[in-house]
Length: 140
Image (cartoon, rainbow, N blue to C red; front, side):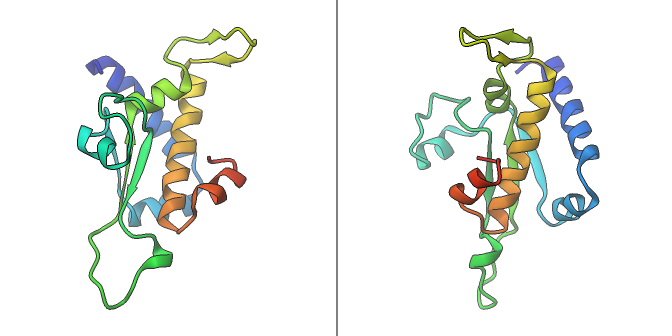
C-alpha cells in the first residue's frame, strides 16, 4: 500500500473512531487496535487461508475471549488488528463503481462502512461472540 493510501485510510479510521459511542471507546482502551497493511503469511496459513491472498482477511482478534478466561491463567493481552488492504478490497476500492447487478461499490463511504463493521466484528470476538452471533447482529 502506498503511503498516501495508508494516510487516507488512517484518516477515515480516525473518523470512524470519533463517530463511535463512548462505550465503544472504553472497550478500545481495554483492547488496543492496530492497523497493518496486510496479515503475515504465517497467520493466513495458520487460519487455512492461501498465504498469497494478502487481501483475504479484514481483521483479527488475538487473545482469549472474556467468556473463556480463567482466573488461574495469565493470558497475553488481547489486541484487534485491522488490515487495510483486506478492508479496501472488501469495500470495493477507493473509487466508486457499480457491478453488473447494479450494486454500488467502492469509494470512501464503503471503506468507512467496512472499517466500522470489521472493528465491531473483532471487538465482538473479544466478548465471546462467534461468527453466527456476529452475523445475526449485522457484523458478519
